[in-house]
Image (tube, rainbow, N blue to C red):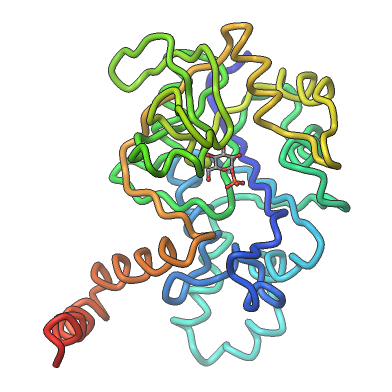
Length: 287
Ligand code: G1P
């Protein structure tokens, strides 16, 4: 099997209830950080990691995602007199081939990934959650691809989170740790108490084709097929490790996470940072 990863899958099925009422009309993945959808940033991260084929799995009511990524000749014609805006639009899809799948009924993350089976074939691929944004010097996707090239196996992208936050994540039970490589003996999905560590899955994975057979063996619970259960089965066979990613991760499905991303991005943008920093100072100082 090749160790070069070229493909990525982004499941965009969740309803985004934490962002209701906005997400009644706008998919959470299209909510902007200033002027660019979260998903667009994620696609850029994947491209920076060497990915050139991306499969986005849409759920019910997520057509706006397709509209964003598919070129719109009518709009481009209308903007012919504004070359800089046109350039921005054309850059959206320039460096990767983006295709779309449909999960007709929301039946869990495992079921969503099954939609990508034909697309990924017998190659390893990155799976990226559509609402986890990671900003880092080296793209998170590249960090994972490099880890995979050294140690080809299923890889969980993790970061250490405060113990009080572990209940929100899949938490790794480490067997041994070697720098950023964390060999796993188990994983607990959103532990209510006694988390086995502080290493949390942050929405980036390298999945190997074996995952599909494992998902097929996972029993459906409350109408959902869990990806974590399939990964857990592979952990038990010693086929999984976690890799501690460098970077700042934002939970864009969460109001506070989205707010911090907007502030951090604004403070880095040449066209906004000075004015915005002044404004923030005046707010903090109560003026
Ligand atoms: C999913 C995974 C969880 C992971 C999280 C990262 O949970 O099931 O293991 O820690 O993504 O964002 P969700 O956010 O879908 O509840």
